[in-house]
Length: 229
Image (cartoon, rainbow, N blue to C red; front, side, top):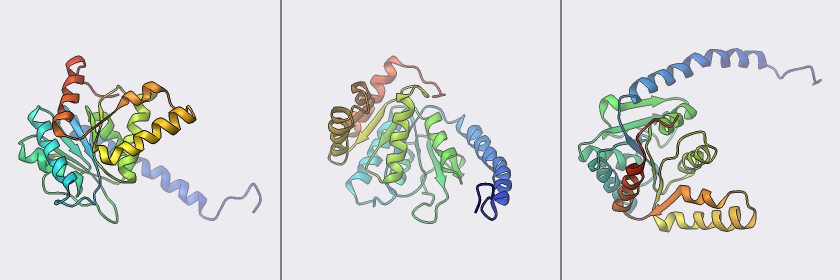
């Protein structure tokens, strides 16, 4: 193949990509219209694989219940596991319970604790992630896998670079998160200086639902609710 040649089918791929813009725009418009009415919300993240008998599932449920008791709504990824626990706690507390679902070949399905008018489906991860960032007043992150880490580090990056307003990022479960945080301090900061000392202040690590709401309330005693961009 010469430099001037393209792989077979390349022109057709480009044509399909152009038409995909309209589907992407449709997801943005639908998301913006529905999410603009939910009010101040906290997003809860964590593994879809966590079972109802797991202590972290029960903790997520208590965290969500406590959050709605304080007047916030709860946003989750809408699926099973920690997401279900978050929506369940919000539902049992009589608060706003939002689910931002993503179509996946495994693990993901709607949980039954989402308000019917606040159950959104997405095909595109980047559209869904934008909804979390734009409409959340804080991120509460329980133990999870690569998807949870992706959402966590994207939010830290956006705040660190000034692309969005700062909001609380709270990791729940010291036993799960402390090792990662120590690696960030010892390797990223101390050994290689790839982050600044003040970047560590973006993260809180706690163990209880009371600590979560204390951090949220302290932050919003001094800050007004607003969209993040």
